[in-house]
Image 1 (spheres, rainbow, N blue to C red):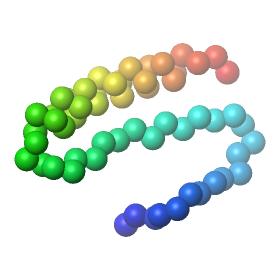
Image 2 (cartoon, rainbow, N blue to C red):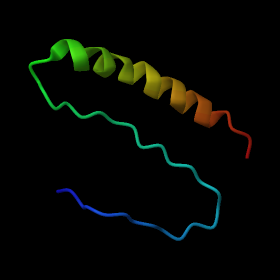
Image 3 (cartoon, rainbow, N blue to C red):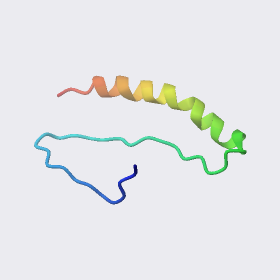
Amino acid sequence: MINEGRYTAVQQDNITVFLIGMRINKWYKVNKWLPVFLTMPPMMKELSQISLNVPS
């Protein structure tokens, strides 16, 4: 289920949200999307480590 449109929420603290993903338009062009797909896990790991080290 996809909810289209923009949504907001009431938040009292400062918060940053990163939306990271990829869309594969042509499955048969593996050489185009596979490198991006394979770099996702290391990128997510690095971003999670960075976000844990932010002083509050």
